[in-house]
Image (tube, rainbow, N blue to C red; front, side):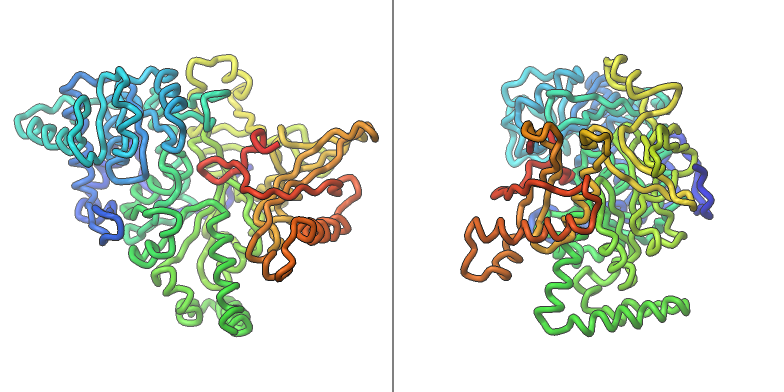
Length: 567
C-alpha cells in the first residue's frame, strides 16, 4: 500500500554520524539531553554540541587503544553515557551490541560470546558480572569507585579530548559505510533461540527520516525516555527521531517516577507501550470518580469535541488539572509493541493530546507502518497506520475476511541474521520480509493487526481464532489486569478448546467483593465476565476454560507477555 497522506519536510542524511554533524551545525546550542547526576536531583542540560564532543572524544580514545573494527557490547540503564557509548562505537569505531541489562549474567555473557565482542561498556551495578571475565576492554559508565581492570568512561573521554587537541583525528575522519553492519541486536530475551539482527546506518537513519515524515517533531520538543534503551522501539523511535529534529530527551528515573519526571521535565512527547497509557487513563478516570468530578470531566470532553470541530483548541484550559499532572506541555503520545484499547486513544484525543501508533519489529529497524499525525487519528484509533514512506507493505495468503500475513520491503529491513543464513532465508523471500504477523487493510489503506501466525488457534473444523483479538476485549474489563488466550487439546472431544489465563486487578476485585475475597469468589466473578463476553462472539471463538493466576505473567522488558513461558 502507498502512503497518500501529506508528508512533513525532512532533511536527507546517510548515516547517524551525518545526523550528529548536522545537529551541531543547526542545533548546536540547543539541549539534546536532560540528565540527573543523582536520584531525585534536578535535570541538567547537555547540548547537541557537547554530545557530539563527548562521542568524538570517546571514539578517539578507543581508536587510539586499538578498538577499531571490533564489536563492543553495551549493557546498562538508559542514560546519557549509554547514548555516548552507542554513537561512539557506531560512528567510526566498530559494531555496537546492545544487550538487555535485565538478563542474567550467564545470558549476557553468552550473547557477548556469540557476537564475538572484544569490549563491553556497562553500568556500575553490573560491574561484578565482568570483574573476572577475560574481555580485552571493560568500561564502566558511572563507577562508584576505581576498580582494577576497568576504565571509567569519563577518564577515557578526557583522554580523548587531549588526543584531539594534539591533532589525533583518525576517528574524527573515519568514513562510515552506510550499508555495512554497525549494530547487532538479539531478538530473544535469552540465548535459547536467540537471533542476532544485523543493522546498518542506512537501516536506522531511513527509519528515523520516514518516521519524521509522518509525525512532526520540533526542535522545542522534549521527550521523556522510559523504554528499554537496548530495544529499537525505545532507541530509534523514542530517542533518535527526537534528536534528528533538534529536540531533546530527558531520562526517566524508573516506572514509579513517570508522573514525577513528566512534571519536572515538562515533556511534550512520551513514547511508551500501551500498558503505560492505559494505566494513565485508568488513574485519571479513577481520580475523577473518587473526587466527584467524573461528570464534569465528561462534560468537558463533550464541549471540547464541539470546539475542536470549530478549529478551536482550548484543551489546556478545559483540562488544566490533568495537563498540570503531566507537566503542562504534553502534546503527543506514541505507542507500539502491542495492541492498545481504542477507547484509551480516543480519551486522550478528547482532552487534546494526540496519540499515534505503529507496527514494527527489530528486523525492520523497527517501524513498518505508522499513524500520520495529519490524519484522523481519532477515527482510526484501532489501526497501526499506513506503510511508512519508502516502505512497501502487502498482505498475502488472505482468508475470506482479507486477513493474511504481513510482508514488507524497504530500506529499514535488516541485512540478515548474524551467522545464520538458513534463518535469514526463511524470513526473507525475493526481497520481502515475512513478518509472521497477521493483518488486513481498510479501504483507506490503514492496516489493522489480527495477531501472530504462530499464535493462531486452529480448531478441528478449520476455524482460525486470533488470541490477541480476544485478549484485547477482555483486557478492557476493569476486573482483569492482564490475560493470555491459548488453545489446549481436549482429548474427550478430540478438539482444541479456547482457554484464558487471567491475572485479576486486585483493587477492582476488592472493591467489588468487599470482605469476601476468596479464590472461589474471584473465579466466579471472572467467569461471569468471560461468559458474558462469550455471548457477544461467534461460538467457535468462545472461551471454554478460565484459569486465575496469582502472579503476573512473565514478560519481556517491553512488557509483552512471553507466551511460551506462560503455558
